[in-house]
Image (cartoon, rainbow, N blue to C red):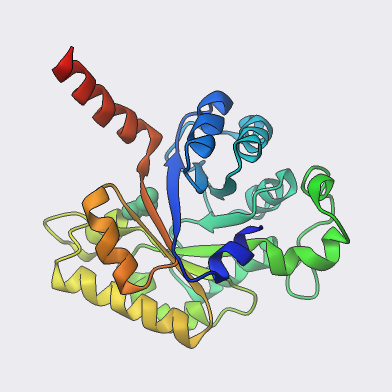
Length: 247
Ligand code: 3PY
Ligand code: MG
């Protein structure tokens, strides 16, 4: 089952961000039941040369792989898709123009101008990759600034866009909130509601990040399709603290 098929199921997709380029750990995470992993090329230590091994490992563990790009640059978007990620998440998209530029790189003509060279991506695709790719590889913009929140509906209307993914930490900073990613804050909460509404109007998927497992049930209840809970580093740190306490 690919990412789009999985997201069409009613249950939300669980996701964890990965920041360290360890195929061995990626395989273990996927095999332990992390349904999908987002390789974080913005704030993590994952670079181009790490993608192949990580994608092979996630596949071997039975998981789905996305990447959060380092920035909104066409060569980064196109290369990640050529490696075979099923979803690309573009950080810090503030305007409809930036959303259009991202989608142009993520989709083949006539929707965009993605260059044709899916050397690895097509390897595991049974059928005509070119014909299927625009529908089956998903392009998400991150809504994580006050500017993006202001132009939300115009961003969501971008032809070819597949989803909106909220970065609550940057969003809190941008909104000038004292607490970061506090979903009970009325200002932050209002943006979450507007993202859910706008996505429904434009037939888009939604995703959101949190670092607290206790937030997950509430985010699922709000209707997010992808709920990311933490990074493997945070999970390790928490496990290590418990381990040391028992040591
Ligand atoms: C944010 O919350 O700003 C993020 O980018 C989540 O990774
Ligand atoms: Mg962010």
